[in-house]
Length: 169
Image (tube, rainbow, N blue to C red; front, top):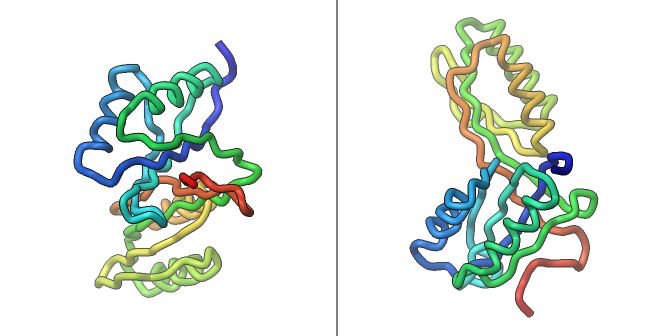
């Protein structure tokens, strides 16, 4: 078995009920794990773009792509090259701020990380941060000393750089 890596897979699928369930069922039946998944309308309103991150070796990746290609509602599947891909994730992080000093520190760190405060309560702030997974993980680690109440992450969404695209022509 080869070395495990994280891969980004982009799939265009029909925009209709049950497609995401079929994809997740296929992963479950085959014993594959989805590290993250994001889905949303593409530039073509009848198609949804799904971005999956999976961890495994090249054999696992090959099997995932083959199995996805077999699903009727899947139109196109591509493996994205990390060096030629823009990949981002969004996270909402509720951070405990029991006093003015903690609140000020969290606000300053949020600015440094180019995040946004999206909710203010008496003893907490919700921070929105967007970037690659390493940036988000670093911010979460920094915030852990204040106390994190909740985290919600979108999973990676990605597009190939330049004129290369995952679309039907």
